[in-house]
Image (cartoon, rainbow, N blue to C red):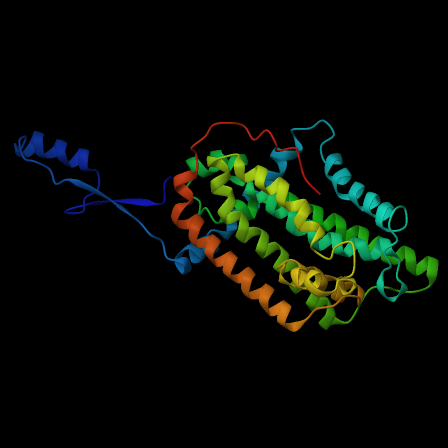
Length: 327
């Protein structure tokens, strides 16, 4: 299903062997030399690749359900592991940073658990989407090799598990809002439509950045395990330079500059502002993040469309780290 090359004949013909047989048997031209077949590389333009993926959007849910089912049926506890992977980090970070070891104060006097939950919602949406999408060519290699599917769809649909985790976070957020409303008589949620739109923008940027990076890493992961190892070492560090567990206003000087250059920081802060009314989004930092994310996404679509097929199907090894999900 290599979409990176097309076969061109001169003159163009369909079924060259059949035509040759007819010429030899019926016309008596057995010794006639047939025109050579020229293999040329097909360099699909960026807009054409995106248009092709959009035209095949009806395949999204079929691929996504296959990817999610393939993950769940591997374990006896099934979806229980997803629940544990979502909520255990919430409890752990809440105990450590909410007073157990460190005493991080949330803005506006809100409970730290609620503040940290929204930060984790944005970060985990980015992190899990990236890690799962990066292994999508391995998990869905039978589709990659045997069906003509735009390769752009594979990392996107392969991240269905990450989207499921996000909805679990969102459900926990709603439950927490109701709980603290009953307990303290105060609604910490931001209910104005313009702020909710800001949170949707921030969360969408987290997903787009993860997909953009995975367009590069998914084909390369088939070729070498080093990509997965690099992600495992990079993501924990990336998390702590992102204002997930602490307000970005606590940072000063070069540390604040590093955080604002981090393309995930502004989207996470947008989610906090839009859902809790607590956070800090600087216009310059937001424009930088949006521009960088757009560039990564567009370059990723270009790479996977032009070169993804070269890497797909190179290895038969099983994704041994499939069940290992980082926080």
